Image 1 (tube, rainbow, N blue to C red):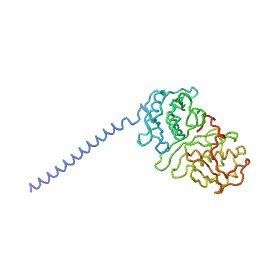
Image 2: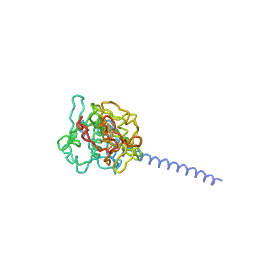
Image 3: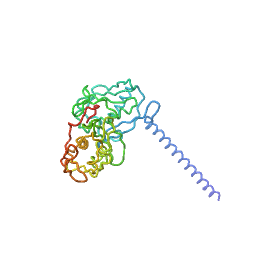
Image 4: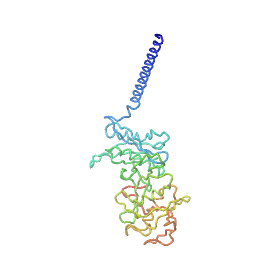
Length: 344
């Protein structure tokens, strides 16, 4: 009986020792995790010497995405330079994303900031090599939008002046851009796990006289499973956001269908397109080319056919007897690209 009792007591002692070993082992693992966490995340957490900021970059899908990073608290010029370096680094989360800057594009001089006495803020000035003009139009718009939004994320920078070989950046017809800011490059990217993308495009709206078109850059949210032209047309109907531009298509116009036959876009609109006008001052030609020029911002589209209630309009339309039965091409002559320096 005594020997049996000793065995039971010994078993209790053994169990207590095992529990103690488990506790010690768990404690060692927990301490290791804490030490690793501080080592790995310690320099990634904001503190009194850094602020949270966002870098914007172009993805492999030709969309704009963003990532948060922490910017050291330095002098304004140094902080701006750090933000530019972070932009040039691109996505750290997605190694397959393309490099933000083309391989042959160079900075000709260190970037600088210029003070604006009227608002106590700064303009960021960056000078690129002439290879800047080798970028395709869509790629250039995305690059410029991501660059401007990255730098203007700093509260003391209200705009970016882009130089190419020491001269002002020109649009596609040689007109210099003014300072680029969030007012004229409206991207507002949203990260989504679905097939949704934000892309910079140019829309065209009437000027004050109603006889000319003015461009307005905007980032539009696209569903990649649907025609891009549908979302562009929706924004044309929504109307302009920038001052000095006026709507061209009545807000009650509905998009019935969009389809592409090769490189021709067929846009099918409700009858309101023909019978409802916004203002007698907006010419019929401006209305038509507001639609056509905007839709032809889609790279593969070389022509637009406007249908009404799924039918070709065979009768001359409007005060100017526009022939809507034909396929339209882009009309550059009706656009004032130099208005406020905003163009494509």
